[in-house]
Image 1 (cartoon, rainbow, N blue to C red):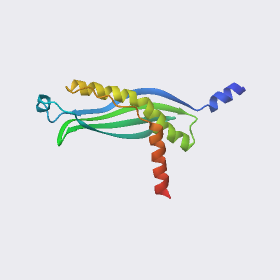
Image 2: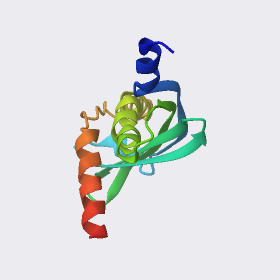
Image 3: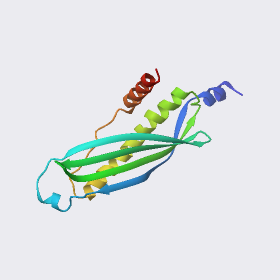
Image 4: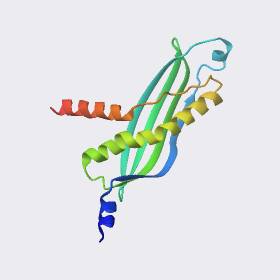
Length: 153
């Protein structure tokens, strides 16, 4: 083997194989009455990531986003989106490297697709545009890691 082949084989890489909507739910329980008045909704956003090892260095990462918009006690709309992707992780055997890849890098790749899907479905539901702000998945991963370490100690 040449030196360049050895260097290429040891290079850590992540390949995006497929990005898809795994699950999508939209509910507007207060319609059509909610469209008869002006309102500024209170919006709550929850995030969760999961991953499944598919073998052969492939992993499915699922970014689940739940958005609830309310006016007082009235739910205007509820969205649950599972945006998924299949990624190939090359030379990421170290648990820390692998954890950072599936906990930060992959959700960062999926987020723009999730943001577009949510914005589109909110508009199709008759509501004003909803633009999710950027999320620092690296900071969220580090926070989660620190919490797991604190619990373990």
